[in-house]
Amino acid sequence: MRNIWLVFWHEYARQVLRKRFLLVLLSLPLIIVLSGGVGVLAVVVMMNNDPIGYVDHSGLLTNPAAPAQTAERRVDMIAFADDASAQQALEEGQIQGYYVVAKDYLQTGEVVLVAEEPVGENAQDDFVDFLKVNLVKGLDSAVAERLMDGSKIEVRALEDLTRKAGENDWVNLVIPLVMGIFLMLAVNTSGGYLLQAVVEEKENRTMEIVITSISPEQLMAGKILGNLSVGLTQLLVWFAVPVGVFLGVRPFVPFLRDINLGGSYVWLSLAALPAAFVLVAALMAAVGATATEAREAQQMAGLFTIPLFVPYWLITPLIESPNSLLAVGLSLFPLTAPVTLAARAAFTVLPVWQIVVSLGLLYATAFGALWLAGRAFRLGMLQYGKRLKLAEIFRRQEA
Image (cartoon, rainbow, N blue to C red):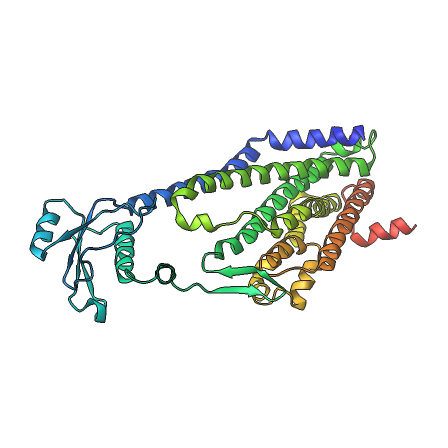
């Protein structure tokens, strides 16, 4: 166990303290922070809290009722007797613009906006709410509130009516897909580090010295656990920064308040994460042990990363039929299971047996890949400079 710990710490420290790792680690959060900052700046630029005027020819806004003041509704509404007085106020800079409500507004819905420069989107939204409040004025409070809310369409799952998707829930469906992308980036990055380390140490024959004091299985276990921790470090930082930005921006962006960061897909992702790391890292380590040079190993390793993207290529049928034979098959195949399980959990209730079998196969395959990596490394050291074929690993095991 001590030997595994020494290898683990060596691998972790060597990768984490590299400038390249720090650059990769900070680049994604920096992009997210900049994107969030640009988004907030765009919202702020499009807002204008200066008063807005209106000229009512319809009589609808005589003795008007004002909407309740909220954090998003701050623009004052100023009534003008005629267009001339409103135009004068606009030219003097007292208002950012004014609306002219047509005489036959109740029949035509005609409203004209007059402004010298674009009016803030928040001011336009506030005036629409102002009109709505006065259109329902005098009705029963429950009816008025229902009319103000407008129509809301929700799609519910037959197997669990508490699971729903509406116009404000679309972001919650995107979150597991984004989590899958973060997972794939971290797995590929840490697996790439391990692949490069194995090939380099094999090429310069450092392995032959190390192997005199540690078994191949212990060496592979330490390397894989070390790179697994590197990937987890990346995920921790990559998730912490977006969540921090989300919590900071949420008060200023109304639709973000409907986002739910919880859900079964979060627990499924966390349950599949360790095995997914070990599986991909072990397969890449096995490739590195069988290859004769780094370029060849990188080309072969691409075969293990392609399946991780398959659920995204087939995302449309997965969304439309999350319980189809295709979706179940992708959930059971170890290399596509981590992303597919989380994506399906956002759209349907997964049977317990599918979760158990999928995670069981994933962990069993991960342990098998770990054994394969150790076996490939042992035989690869005996055939220095020669490419080791996968079939030879099992033939020699039988002998």
